[in-house]
Amino acid sequence: MTLSKKGWQEFLKLCSKINSPEELEEVFDLFLTIEEKETLASRYLIIKALIEGKLTQREIADTCKVSIAQITRGSNAIKIITPELRDLLKSRLK
Image 1 (cartoon, one colour):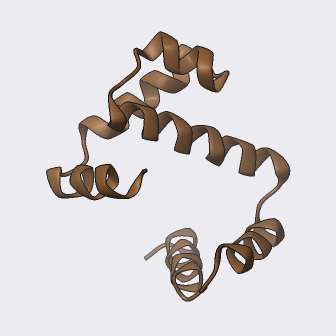
Image 2: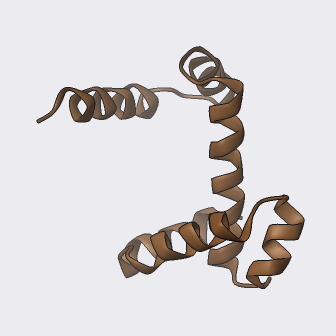
């Protein structure tokens, strides 16, 4: 396992042990820059909108103030997830 993979796995374990959104925000404030948090937030909104399937890609881009390229990357990522993960996201992204 590479050092970065090991670090990522340990970071995920740390996050899974956090009990509240407030604590998680404090941890993310420590580990992520403002720009990284904005990028993650945009990606979340894109994935959520794509999973919901209520808006066109152009509408998502306009609503989320992101580029079509970002929407395309999110759409391509969704194409390779398992049906189980898609169902999990549909049930939790509300």
